[in-house]
Length: 155
Image (cartoon, rainbow, N blue to C red; front, side, top):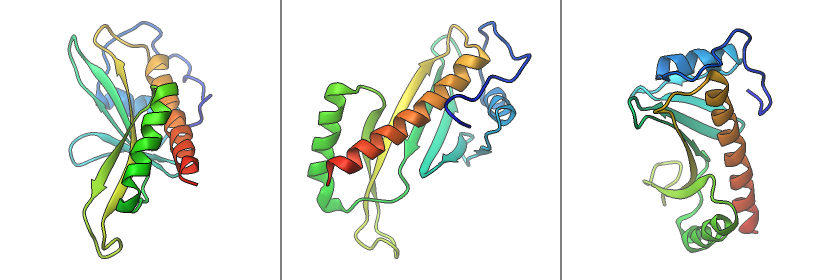
């Protein structure tokens, strides 16, 4: 799905409830492939960014979109990454960027740090299909930009 993908014709233009199944249908209609994760979240990949989407229900419902860079950074870069994230947040509050520690594996014996970002949209009062799709699209673009900025800040 591109950042400018049109909303499929005939889609709801009146705000209504959103759930994971309807989000999956909307994304599929927009040409985006996602699959359910083991916890029921929707998982997808846009370029190098792995994306996880969840929808909570009710008056305080939220569509959460979380993106992760799949390649870990060395643990030694933690101070520089934290500084770069803090500096970026001074000028760009979204996405909310964070570091996630990865345990050691055969491929990465020293473990590492994954760079992540999160964007949330309140859906408790209802959301149109266009709003839900635009939120996912805007979140993915913001992750890609933030991750590029943060990688560049380490150079």
